[in-house]
Image (cartoon, rainbow, N blue to C red; front, side, top):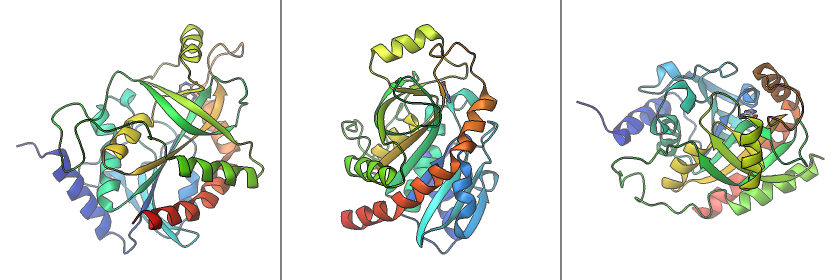
Length: 282
Ligand code: HPA
């Protein structure tokens, strides 16, 4: 007998909650090269994905593969160090499974982060960009198949995917930290090959500022469950064909590490303000 997704998410969440006395209302997914935020959490428990029942395991280089539950500035958070991607062979529903688990753990605000290619020429390498919206070009949706009403409605609204108040907070805190405040539209492709220059010209024409291979399945599942979402991309490289040079995954990881200080500072500044918003929404 196959266990349904909701029951699986409940079991995985119960296991996570059995490992810590903290009850996080804020979740984070830390993308390629961006994991070290979770190294600095206080009172942390580190739960390898392999220990969480039915949790998918990341194979991508630069993804540690553990859930860290701890405190940032006194606020309980659940931070995923590494995620799984469609290109690893997982379905969109499996890619979004950890988001389902965070939702069942009690997370109400989800902060998604990723490494992305910059299409908008106002961005430079290392820029941090708050997502205003996305374009799903992955050819898959985590909600495909029978809808489980315990998660949410069959046809969830996506007009307000990236919470406006959270975006304002992130841009305000970026300014305070002297990080240039950028907002943009993220196009998600399945990967794993990078885009061609012609594909990047096409993406620019349809309104994309950034391109990457993640985030969208999680954002859709989070909205399905009524969580509020903030997403921040780190522009690790300019997208294919913008500069006359090939793309390189090692460079993606290197740039992530280089802006890590800024990135961690931004997350630390944003979390207490999002915690206030979560309280207000209760
Ligand atoms: N394209 C797709 N995904 C990425 C890129 C890119 O240029 N950089 C980092 N992730």
